[in-house]
View 1 (cartoon, rainbow, N blue to C red):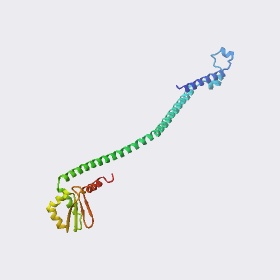
View 2 (view 1 turned 60 degrees about the horizontal axis):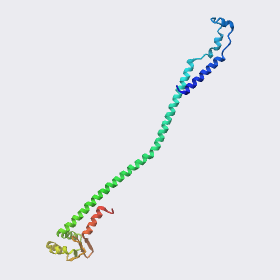
View 3 (view 1 turned 180 degrees about the horizontal axis):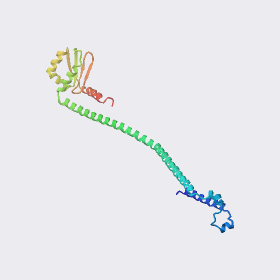
View 4 (view 1 turned 90 degrees about the vertical axis):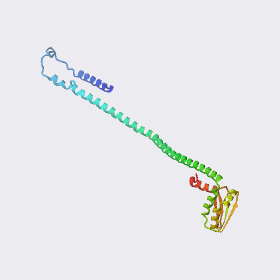
Length: 230
């Protein structure tokens, strides 16, 4: 039993004993000498309301104990709920931070994948460029193909000037089939050696402008298409 309940019980017992002392009535000697006589019953009638009634007292104590337990449980529940809400408020900033970090990691992963993909493409491009330079150095037929592709872009069939590397100039002069195509298409064709033009490329001068078919320019266009401003 709780300390509070024990204190209440002790107080009620003291009160009960005090009431009994207040109700002690002197008994006549004749009544004392004849205790077995029933008497007129007035004493019992006068004092019956002051007799302890345990049947009435115990339920009151039990009700007090029940009320105490109810209030205690209510206080515990309120404290639990308050602590839960406080816990949510304390955890929310941490949860928001974790969510933000997750988003940033996801974005970083996406950027990393894009960067890795771009790195692979650039590596492939550099490898292809080296292969191209090697093929140009080893094969004399490259300049013939480049010149033919450049001439497809010319609408004016008047006089043209082909500026090419000295080694490529000798190849073009010996390419009889290409020579025949050139003179059948254009009124005049002049093949000039130019040390500033790299091997495998050419500059075509026409009456309307200049066509840059050098290897460097073509690679720059490919690189711009692949990588843009990156």
